[in-house]
Image 1 (cartoon, rainbow, N blue to C red):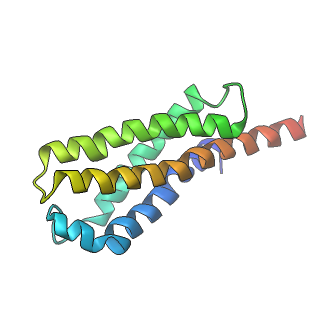
Image 2 (image 1 turned 120 degrees about the horizontal axis):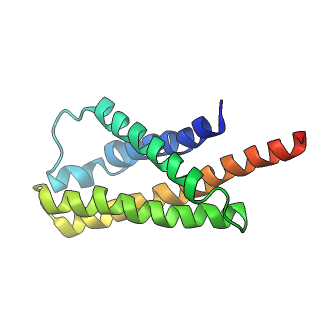
Length: 141
C-alpha cells in the first residue's frame, strides 16, 4: 500500500469505527433523544462521505504538514487541530444550524466530544504513517 493509501486509511478506519460505535451503539439513546436521525440510517452513505473526507484530509496532510519541521507528533497535533476545527464546522455547527433536533446545545456537546476524540486519534496516526514512510525511505537510501 502506498503512503497516501495508508494516510487515507488512517482517517477512514478509525473515523468509521469510532463513528459507528459512538453514534449507533455507545450513545444511541442520547442521539435518539435528540430526535434528529432517520429511523433507517443509511450506513453506506456515511461511509462514502468519510471516504471522500479521507482523501481530502490525506491530501491536506501531505501538502501542508508532512514536510513541516518538528516532531511527527507535533505535526500530527497541528494537523489534528486544523482538522478538528474544520470538521466541527461542518459536522456540528452546520448540522445544528439546519437540522431539527430536540436540543441544539446537547447536540453541540456530544458532537464536539466526538470530533475531539476522532482527531486525537486521526491526527497523530496520520503523522505516524508519514513518519514511518519517511524512515523507510531513509533506511533504504
